[in-house]
Image (cartoon, rainbow, N blue to C red; front, side):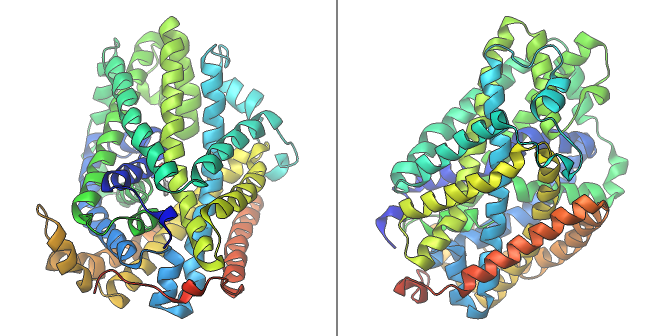
Length: 496
Ligand code: PHE
């Protein structure tokens, strides 16, 4: 592998991995997931998911990526040439995720800009849905293109291009070394400030108030697994790709555990901030938390602007800080999802990093324009469910079979243990990656399918069909196109 795809140091790898994990999933998804799935009681399925799924799987993913020092697709071709289509399916799927993720980053860019003068006005809800997104809950708005949104999305793509085209160490590595620590610092400032607001305790009491009865519900277990996958970027090829760029002397077990701890600490910390702010708002407006709390888009782009409005001048400082944090968190995540398809096409078609980044950014930016229409938010919601509930879970299942059984996870044990002082792998780890995780995945997959099948409108069926076709057609095209690189068939393994 050329030098353009190597981290300069192990710390660059760990920071980039934390950058990948800490993203929108931590700030806008987790607080609501925690609140709506039993509050304090959610920690039981959450910790269960970390221990049984996240820790064993991240080690497997890093280990195999490290071994092949190549893209996910090239590793699959080496393992089972007949599975090449699957080797493209995941990178193409994650590229689709990259495209809708860029949309949210674009929206956040708009709010960063507006936050300097509270440009969302006195009614942030109407501003978001009516003035800005002009949202429709169907495909009927797809012809209504909104240039203002498009411009901010293109700015996001410009950043991705600017960073991804450089050699790994000088681009991504450098960006993560600067921005990931900054992300934590700014978030700590925001959260500490939020905790001092009057009424913060109202929000926190509500957040952690445990509803133990929910532990008997399948949904909260599904929610915990879903959150852990998304938030840790598990099984999406990002960890695999980043680990393939590491130096020979890396301790992958400790690195994986470090990433998990940083990510989970960040999201729980973010939840403290979000709920303190909601508590403050509840005290000011007299409305109960249950009426104010919301998820995703509404939380970040409606509830937060409302709070910044109430906060007066402080809102003018806190607002830009907050939207900047979300931007950086999103950008360092999207760079990792972008990398997955990028390195695959570099490997097969003998492209330079620069070339691959140029082509993919152009294609991605063009396709992303679908989201700059009135139907953007609607299409985004369905795409998100499809990618996260169906594709990723299916893919992690196949990864377990390929990596744990065909590659043989046993091969990793001595090597990994030799590098790691604090933690050692043993039989329990093998049992997880070979049996326990695949069984859990099958169960969650059917749960996720149920949610998808509940979307019965014609428009959602059109979108889902479009997604499946795009995935399959592109994966087949990439498989059929002849390899331009001689090295495509030569893979040097690092672990004997
Ligand atoms: N982990 C990211 C988040 O929490 C999402 C992500 C998944 C990013 C996969 C890259 C790859 O927002």
